[in-house]
Every structure is written in C-alpha cells, then in structure tokens.
Amino acid sequence: MKLHILQLSFAHVTSKEFKSIRNGEVLKASTIKKIEKAKNISLTSIKETLTKHGVTFITQQSEFYPQLLKEIYDPPYVLYVKGDLKVLQTNFLGVIGSRKASFYTTHVLKRLLPNLKALSIVSGLAYGADDIAHYISLENGLNTVGVLAFGHDIHYPKSTFKTRERMEEVCCTISEYPPGTPIKKHQFVERNRIIAGISHGVLVTEAEEKSGSLITLEMAMDENRHVFCVPGNITSPLSLGVNERLKEGAILVTNSDDILIELNV
Image (cartoon, rainbow, N blue to C red; front, side):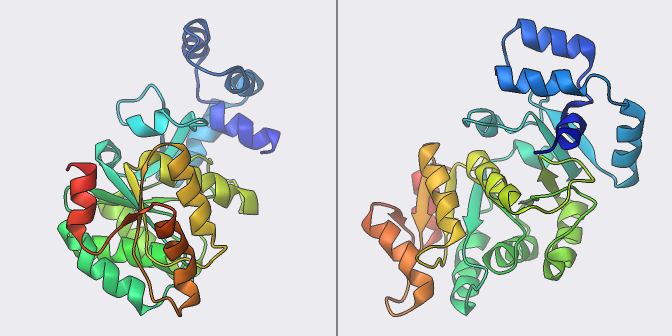
C-alpha cells in the first residue's frame, strides 16, 4: 500500500487517541508506524472527501466494528462505511463462488437464503456468485453487506453498480480503503480476508479447481470459521473446487438447516 493511502487510512486518529492506544498496547508495532506517518495529514481535506461521497468511518474502538473481524490475524484498523452502521452488529455468513457462476448458483441461493433471516449475507460485489447472493438477499429482506476492494468513489464491475446502490440504501458497503484508492489486483485478495474474518461461516456455491473463492475459503479455515460447500455436478468444471473441498472435510450443504444448525442460530 502506498504511503499516501496509509496516511489517508489513519489520519483521522487523533493524537490523544493514538497515545491512549499506544500506551495500552492495543495495536501492533506495524500499525503504530502507519499512524505515526499520518500525523501531519490534513484532517479537513479527508473529511471533505468522505462527506462528498456520503462515507463515514469506524475504528476498532467503535461499537459498530464487527467483533469477529477484530480477532483475525490482520484486521483493518479503519473501516470506511456507506449505509447503515447497525448492520455491522449482526451475525454474518459469507457467500462466495465463481464469477462464471451458472444458473445452478442462482437456483441454490434462491433455495437457501430466504430461510437464513437470522444471518446477514456478506460478499464482494463481484460479477457472478457475489452479485447473485446480494441480489437474492435484497429481494428476500435479508441484510447484506458488500466488501469493496477500493475506495467508495470507485466501482467495479459496472454490472453490479445497481445492486450496490440498493445495498447502500438499506444495508451498507464497507472498505478498508479510503476514497481515492484505485483498483489494484492485490487488494481483492486483501478484501477476501475481511469477508472471511467478519463471518461465522463461509458458503461456496460453485468454484473452479483454482478459483479465487477457494483462497477465501482457506482464509476462513485459517480463522477457524465454518466452511460450507454446495455439492456440484461431477462433470462440471465449476464444481471441481467445491467437490474437492467436500472430500477434504468441508460441511456439505443441501438445505438451509445444514447452515443454521452448524452455526447454532
């Protein structure tokens, strides 16, 4: 991450708050260094940028910061949020899958998600399975949160923009990157750790043998989250990844109770 992005991310931490955090040894040394680099940044310009785009921010000290996310190895100190902060206090299920998701993903999620009203659905607002999960959640009155891999003044891909607008009206989108942060490939992997970290469990619908969704699944396993997979057609390339994970011990899901019972919600 470039210096100016680091500065933007931590510039709103006041000197008093910084001293309190540092003395209490709440933050890692690497995080403290980031904050030190930010102490000369203009708070006024940052606040103007956030206000312009209707974005607020929370730190790990906020009541709205998701508790599970605090527990991961590398939690973002700051989350930029557009929408309803209260949604972040709910219990999350991550839903991920292939960008090439077939109608099977749509059919599966239409069957599963309406019965998961005790959970909020979190995904990455990508084309394919992510967008399908967000859309079906909205259509069925479930909370859903999109995790962005860039600043809130940017959107990618264009095909999911309308879904994002609806989410920000009734739920929210979040990012660890402040407005002005451009799209970079490595940020999508960093985004995935937030999806895994904020969730009690992660569900994969379809995934190729070397799908990026499987990276998120591995992150979930590393953080001791529940890993759920929907079994797929053994002749479909989109099922290779999930079927392999099922053989390795992922929880097989054929109905919503398989998730609810495991998560005890």
